[in-house]
Image (cartoon, rainbow, N blue to C red; front, side):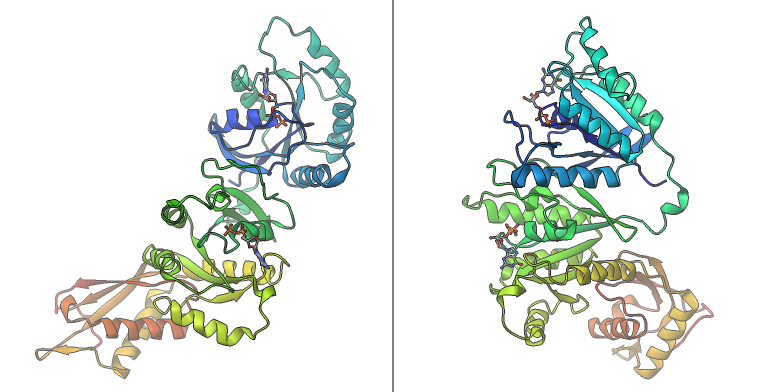
Length: 443
Ligand code: GDP
Ligand code: GDP
């Protein structure tokens, strides 16, 4: 079942972020006293009463605002309106009904989506008389809640969940979420790249200090494919002065890599490739993740890409399968190509080779180039089968696993790649001893 999307909307300062935090049970969104503050559109999964949905916190809706921030915020809400299956429209019971609320209600009604109206900042449930004016919005009875105290939020969730649509099952297959980790050293442009992937300024890069929170995963959809950008909080951490940060950022990258199925290893076209880049990439390889080497900031380089790509390939020679993609997060150059490459390596990591084709290939390969001989004994491969994807993993049943040579495994890997590609994904081989009297025998 595909997960429906619920967007919290409402004018600034009604408590959307606070409610988002309350409902998602974590302190991920920013809360600031100052109204109209720039905020990201944040996403989080919520489970309630056996249903799951994705909750979005929009930055606020300032229909009267002029200037960049409110324009940006407004754009975010429009996007949220487009993406959401249900709207959770929040008003402030203390402030009472405002013109902006009325205007938002109009926008909301035009969106033609189910709406749950909630009135926030109700800490005293005896004083509910003030709620009646919200009936004027024409959206039914408001549910009183207190986001800060967590009052009545269970009821709110009950009503939300009851209104959730059941999204069709067939949604699931094509939109298996691709979990993308964007990793690399500080300053290579990870945060800018996340923005570029999301679309221009959909996530505002915040300059507010201390905006680091727990892991924030951002969901996005492009051409019917759903993606999750893993731990964008880790990416967008701003403080670059602390010394332990390098170490910390590697640890954080490792965590993000673990949770992902496609890793974008971002390098800065202006910088040398250093050990830390290789450490991160090496970890992705070990974890069996599909990888793309992303050379960012190409807008600043006036060279041909090919020699540079060769250099990158050389530096990451332990992962020759990883494609190199040149982009500019700043000018949004080749971001579509990057999406295509993400899809491609994801698909290749999920490739399954039918057992018969696999065995034919191994048979031919072993005839073409005999397996290694050690102390007069030759390796025999009796049978092969693929038992896993992500990464594709092959079980080889052999006479003596110790007879296998690293170079011969690499030969087999190359044969497999020649036949099937497996672009961007590492491959695994597991050797099993099998008795000689098995009928299947190629060498
Ligand atoms: P947003 O701009 O709509 O996301 O609003 P925020 O979540 O940033 O909250 C705005 C202000 O309202 C903050 O000072 C919050 O502490 C306060 N606030 C949020 N929820 C409640 C609530 O349930 N009760 C009270 N009394 N204050 C709240
Ligand atoms: P992060 O630390 O890896 O998240 O890097 P940021 O996204 O914060 O970017 C670091 C710096 O590089 C910022 O000053 C960005 O404006 C700049 N930057 C990021 N991507 C590009 C790009 O594609 N081209 C250029 N010219 N600058 C970029």
